[in-house]
Image (cartoon, rainbow, N blue to C red; front, side):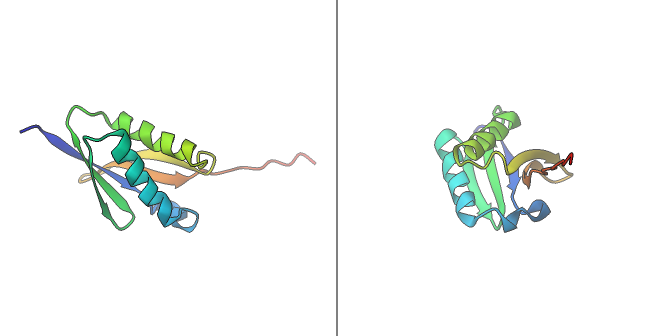
Length: 104
């Protein structure tokens, strides 16, 4: 039996639920499962738990999230940020901060 690890994708952080639609979460689940068929995905509220083979890098998951955001036209609004706590390793999808400078 092969070794596995769990990676969490959190979408509820920093008020992103206001602009992040529920359909995006479902589309993200479907997109990751199509791109990476060896990954099992479970949804718990606004968190996605991915059970991946041990040899699959976390960077691969981040690249797939970025690809999904680009395909949906959300790359200018959201970005994946990695995080690591004592019990969880994964990514948070945060809203990009936009600074507007006016010179006049």
